[in-house]
Image (cartoon, rainbow, N blue to C red; front, side):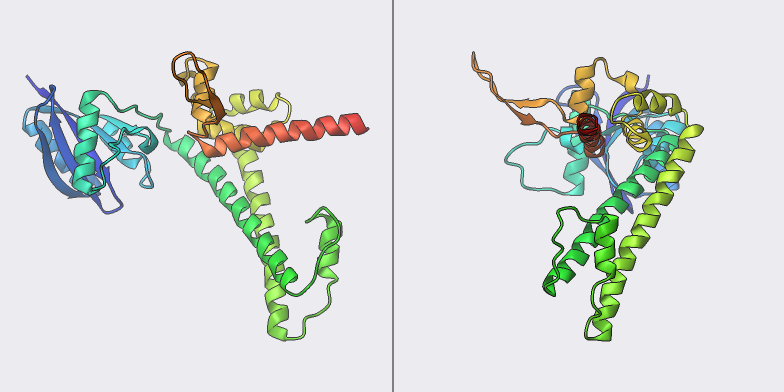
Length: 307
């Protein structure tokens, strides 16, 4: 009869540290070693574990290496969980961190049932996430580029006296500014403007790509449903659908709001109940989209009142 073993994997770009915890409380935890982060090495690991008459159950932390390892192990017929680093219990006084200790910790906690797996997207879902997150990175780059241009102008005593920036009127003011004394200084000014225009064009391209991709996406119906809500446009709806994924994995709305980090923090003791600001745990991009949607509602309400 095969015995169950819990395998903790500390995954890096080039290597994977492997630790094995035998089934049963207080049983041995062994450091198996370090293997290359390649399909052949992972396949060899699974063959060695199966040859030892064991049934391995794998887990590793979500991170920059993505879900490729999870898909590989699942395709090979093994159970594999991806866990959120933020949800891993850690000892307050533990100041030593090595790949070996991390792998052993994962194996021990996985055996004890103290790790909660995260939902793992399929390849189509991850492709949509990549597209949407590239747009978010472009928005961040646009913000930085605009700050750089504003700082450049401020250093040279050029101040815009109207309250709203980056409108047609503001751009007309920027483009009509005097020529700078030195040619290389003028070149720097022109390049700062050109960078902003290039990023704006990239964002427009990504926006259109998202709208086109939604049409044939399996979560397209969810996007359409979300768009029926006030303040939610196609980009916001697609972002929420891509980040949340299968909404049926949440038992109730409160679980969804907790995953978004939109529930209040709480520090209660006895009869005293103290609630603070929202927790901001979970998916930051999805939470940002929820806030943006609420701001859009306020804008529409103001227009309705004014006009």
